[in-house]
Amino acid sequence: MTRVAAIDCGTNSIRLLVADADPLTGELVDLDRRMTVVRLGQGVDKTGRLAQEALDRTFAACREYAAVIKEHGAERVRFVATSASRDAENREDFVRGVLEILGVEPEVISGDQEAEFSFTGATKELTGRDDLAKPYLVVDIGGGSTEFVVGTDHVRAARSVDVGCVRMTERHLVRDGAVTDPPAREQLDAVRADIEAALDLAEETVPLKEARTLVGLAGSVTTIAAIALGLETYDWQVIHHSRISYEQVSEIVNGLAHATHDERAAIPVMHPGRVDVIAAGGLVLLAIMERVGAREVVVSEHDILDGIGWSIA
Image 1 (cartoon, rainbow, N blue to C red):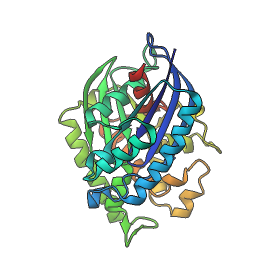
Image 2: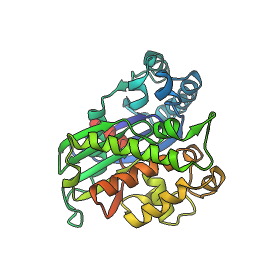
Image 3: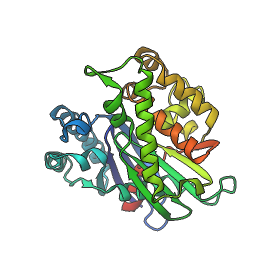
């Protein structure tokens, strides 16, 4: 066994997985898995730069993670950075800060690489199940982008498009520096129009409608699943591989889109860092389900983070 540490730094959150990995089978045994909402992508869509306060929040989380990695004695560390740091003019400030704190340079990966990691992490456990038809369509709804991957045992086609819960919220649901409470109909229509245009782009290279099983990843999807399951506290083991119907998703997303900030914040399983962006993330999921005709989404708690971990093994 090799003890590995995988870090996934996205637009909205940074996550850590420390696990024992079998280099022959790629099996991972979790030792520590955690997530911190740092909103690294704050304002990037508008300014093209990483805000200093966003960098400060991210570096604080990196210091916490460095202590956890040292405590567990991880032998190999891989830090992968995605959408926000790909887009930013000052990403070298981010790279230097991470290198100083963790001793590894963040790999600012392409959207296609991100899609491959997400697919591997999400589907490795599904192989061999006869109740889920192939090919899979894996959708990873992040803060700045959404990855679409179609494949069976291997990736067949992938595309990353620039719609995510943070980007859509900042672009369409913010007025006078604050998220509209609740959003107006024209704002929600603008979000939906952007998502539909992104789906058109994705379909140029990824045969979305050929998929037989939709697998959904990341916080927007898992939060909607937790609400659908009626959980009072967030329990990843209950959420992992749950199957949420289109009707449930539609009802929940429409409710979130028309709720006030306080109403969303009062939902027991709602992470404080998702209160303002969950409606946009939910609209992405709903539009995908309608585009591909999916009657349900299989929710996976294993995603790009696990794909990074397996890549180290």
